[in-house]
Image 1 (spheres, rainbow, N blue to C red):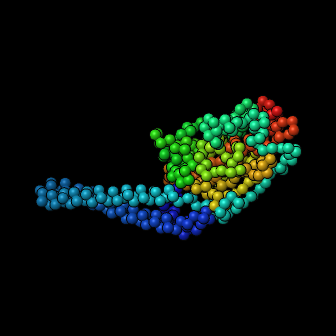
Image 2: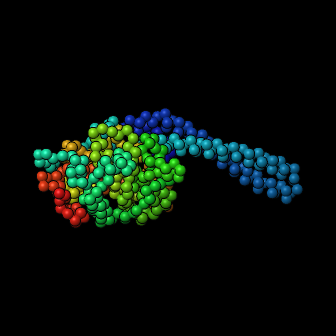
Image 3: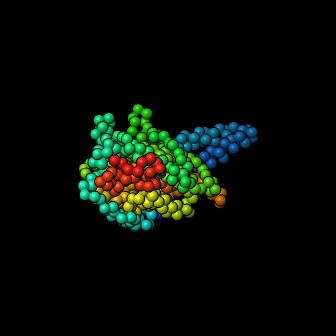
Length: 423
């Protein structure tokens, strides 16, 4: 959530930068500033009335002591009038604050100046490509056919048990999932991230804290009876660890990682691009989260991108790095880099990680602050990244490493799988 003071002082710049997202913010920002002005005027009147009432209260006591009962009673009556007026002002103030908060919830983060203009993922800027696409043998097939051939994943059984988008992993397919889990967590720990196992259901305050609520696109699963939400990513519960927390500068950086299943409705997703593991309603992911000093957040972003690169290189997967354009940028992000792996049998690039700097946007919602060396309280910066999402990594591993003899396992994973080839 943007800070109202920042919007007030930089109105034209905020409106202009939001255009990079293809978001016309002029109307909502004008409305917000109008409500803010009303709120400040109401607060000013309330403060003046409270000060006056306090002064009168002191005068009343003195008048009674001097025997000036009539004057004291008149001031007492005025105090009663002020009390009624203040009650009305307090109600007006509460209404204005709620209206302002609701408007702020619907304004996305201001993109960093590095963010290129564009409308969709087709306009993202490819900044680097690493590795060569593998040459597959004749008769190579996509991962969903490999999964069936080697009895690794049963998509139809998942439909029977739950529905489309909930696959069942079996045998070496399940072991490969577990191998990826341990591989990612071990490397995160080595990189200084503290492993965390958070809840998979979160309350409304947690959803608002990281910007998943209000859920404008209806992507979150909601349990109506208990009013809880299934998490779309571990970012949500892990980042909320710092909700309403005041850190010290010496506490930075806070580095956490978490493995969780993730749940997304993926409303409106259909067609050939969602076959197999390409787009699921339930999938596994290891997430990395950092809470840092504002001066260091973009250096931290670069470090996180380098870390995810290192994982892909250890897995021997060709990948490219994309800087997201304004039209593809997430609501809460100031700058995002996507990591995409090449899927040889599908002849396409698959997004496997997003690494984002939210600057103070989430921290303002979370009230995640730190006490600076200047003695003042400031908002921290938050970042997160997938390290990594399992399904498309698994899809690329199966497709890129298929041979006539079977599916070879990358050397870095063999200690985790206990086998070198799937036959």
